[in-house]
Image 1 (cartoon, rainbow, N blue to C red):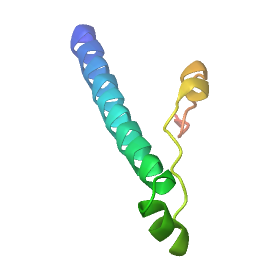
Image 2: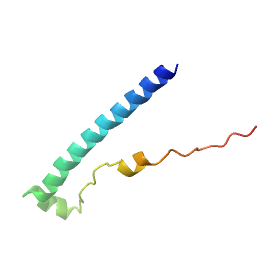
Image 3: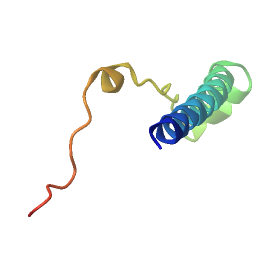
Image 4: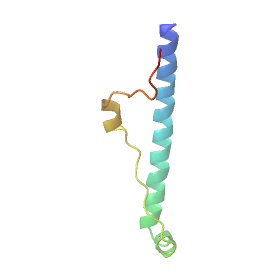
Amino acid sequence: MVSELTASIRSIEDEIGRQRYTFNNISQQYNTMCDTIPSNIVASAVHFSKLEYLEFEEEINEAPRRLHSRKE
């Protein structure tokens, strides 16, 4: 049971990593287009702003907090 839980957590963490990688690549392409002629002219005309990359370094180092306390 513990090994199944560990495998599930690892699988979820891997999926989060893949999604973050994909988002950051798309953000990089978008930000490049916002800096490149002629798309930067359109981006500034409609007030597009650059996207920030997803980073979880601070959150990874913090211990999770309990959302609900159990009453007995």
